[in-house]
Image 1 (cartoon, one colour):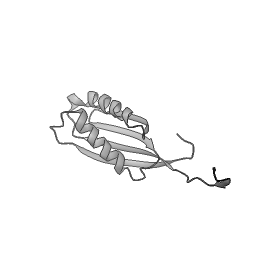
Image 2: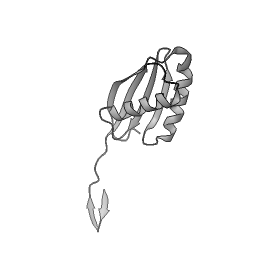
Image 3: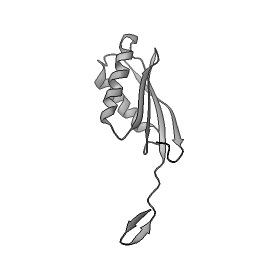
Image 4: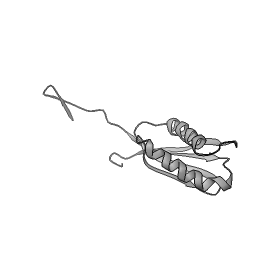
Amino acid sequence: MECKGGVQVNSPVKHLFRVTVSCAGIPPALGAQAAMDVAEEFTHRQWHQNVRCTWTGDILLLVADNDFDSDGEALADEFSDAVAACTTATFGYRIRIDGVVKLPDGAI
């Protein structure tokens, strides 16, 4: 509850989402370094929490929690920008939204 002018009002409830996106097409020789560089890039994007970027051997996988991206489009767009910025990106790559899960209240 929030108090405005002596009157209590309900604050809007923010839902939390765990978004998983992947990037295919990164050459294997660049994958491990790309995962580290993208993870570091997301330390500057503090509107995402619990960010994890991993290289599986053939795809770059990014998982992040936030309170605004109910369809995963925002994270996918930012992930694409980060891949382009953190690699030579002279290869073709594809970003895919793998899933969005609404987290229980208080999960972050």
